[in-house]
Image 1 (cartoon, rainbow, N blue to C red):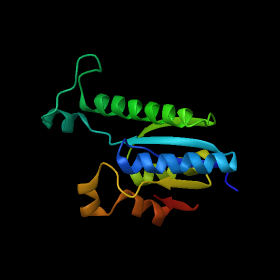
Image 2: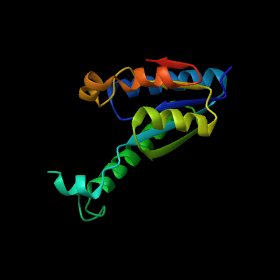
Image 3: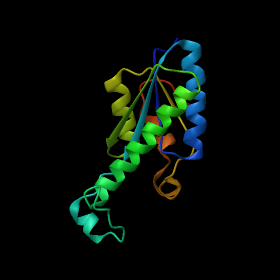
Image 4: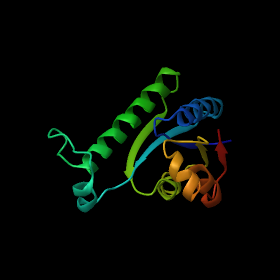
Length: 147
């Protein structure tokens, strides 16, 4: 049925629910599960204007902090998948606009299903610009399951 399932993961409650559903589906189909965590790239100008200051260990800028937080979230999701008994999983971290990066990664990895949470961490942006899940359903060339 499905061979590769993409599940975007941002650490939110909605993403956790989508991840669990994706694991169930991957087990049923014996599919490879691709976990993706997307973070927004911040320019040096944005970082210099930010009230958040990066730690010295991570390079001292907001972009490095965002990348590291995304890496931790992706690794955590991968661990959760394996704890649920599904070993056929990989995890990736990418910078960019979330919906477009999800779509591009799905195409790049040859995914034939995307399982996405209905609400993520960007709730305010969702009210103003349209939620990531809504954008993904509109742009995807493969089926999208919104959990």
